[in-house]
Length: 493
Image (cartoon, rainbow, N blue to C red; front, side, top):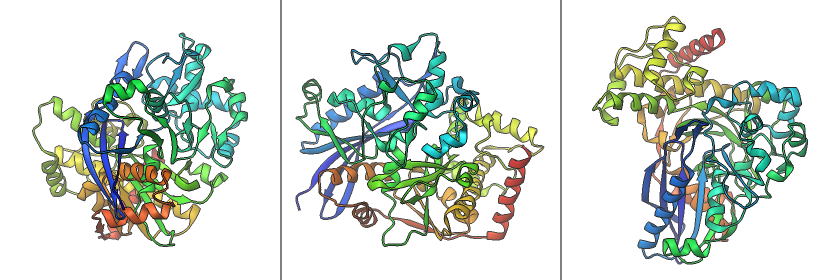
């Protein structure tokens, strides 16, 4: 079998990277070509993504791919969910896309409820209610004095927008569209009922395609800028979590596993054959998002390493010189369960001085605040692991027993987080691959080309291509009591 080479461009909320994926003899090799920061901009109109900067980094990634001298079989882009750009009738961007952490959507879930009952919205979309969802961002656009919706001809989510810039084709892919709370995850189409109830222009919403679809080829001007030829632009699972879950290395017919896609967010859930949009699922605030090969990602968002990332950002301003490895050593040596945090408390949701926010949260909840960097890191990691346990318990009540947890993504590189997660869950954790998103992206492209025939094929390739680490649970009774303590704290606050 001749090796094929694809580029996966994975844009996260804090950084982006371009990975060269080479598939040969049933094994995947990933090589990083480019990594770059992704910092939002604070403008008079709010918090925005710098789309021109991001597109420039995409072009630079493709130039670096050209320098490898390899013939590329495809280019795939995945990003975080919910955020979008609005295009004019002339196909120009009306404004930089808003960042999902912009506070402009506060209170707009209540506004949506006045237009359509929330249980009806959930029965159609199965998407958890979070102020950052596309639905509430569009309601904020309705109130924007710039009247962007009036002049908009189409809406494109971040990966769709970048695909448009590369190929000239305007369309959306199911996994990213399903993050919006405007998409029917059962019928795989936009919900006209919700769009009409919210008084949104139906013409905004483009046609949609499943993951693993060839969008088009690079435009001539992009070929000239990058030195590449007419390389296919392929929509993988364009939502980064969709690509990551596709690369969960689960093999065989068993479905008794759950996943945690661990990064800025921790997505805790399991894969289903069809949406679960019951009253109980809504009460637990689980989401149903589309996956590869017609699957549904049934999970709940937990604020993951965001709190730690923001602590590190604050300490960097104070010129703290600890390496990541040193901080993990300090955390491992720190006393256990100094205090408990709800990672999803609204006070942690926006940018700012996270150590100060944690200290204020502890004062508000009558707990001692962490005393040093090691205690801060340990408290965050313990709390993320404990909140994951609480979500796993709810997941079991809704879908049946979970015997194994697959932890993929950047968090799988953090041995303390992995061990804490196994301890808190009371179940083994199989960690890896760290580059699950890029692997899922590249292998969905291979499926689009007919090199792989199924999601099971993707997972077999992943399982044989990456080293995985198994963590066994320890001290389960102590961690179960800690999970109960966090539950009590959350209920009280």
